[in-house]
Length: 229
Image (cartoon, rainbow, N blue to C red; front, side):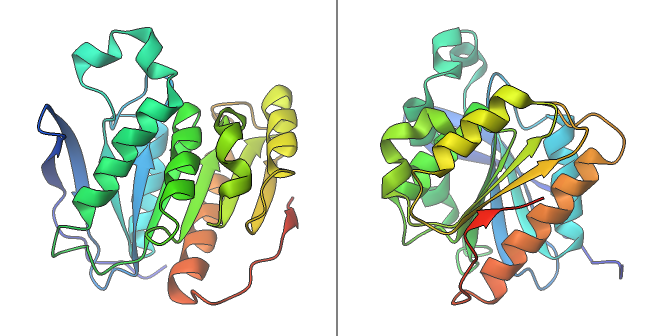
């Protein structure tokens, strides 16, 4: 793979409703073809080693990334906030709006990458903002928690689940039956919920890159609906 020139990672501050400020890390490759905002979940943050690793791979494929906290430290101490997917979605939505005000990325197609409860927040955000988002990727996501919004979703979604994460596989299958938008379920054999097994996170990055690049570079392409490997 040809090396891609990356701008230095920028630490950014994202104001939320004039009340709190979230910290993020924005990386923009040369000739970027799109921006992917990461929606962390279940108490995770922009420091998540798995999402940071996936983001670095996306950068090498000319995808800009924004890794950001969804909660302040004080808010994260309240466990109820961690699992309140509509509250988290409100934060993701504000981050999306913020990105559209930045001249260095506002012209780029936009996607969301959600993990765990962050995936449900990403689905809700996409359902509410179909004109702003080109695609969603869920890694081990609890998209079932966005049940009230699944049939309203018009944005293509890729759900990636570990083959050994049997409950989440079941929940994703059931949730995707309610999705009318183009969608795909990819099951990574041998992977557990965190994709810590050798080679599994690499598969997550590969599928995510392909999904976003297809959507960002050929926006009118018709995505197949069905279940992947």
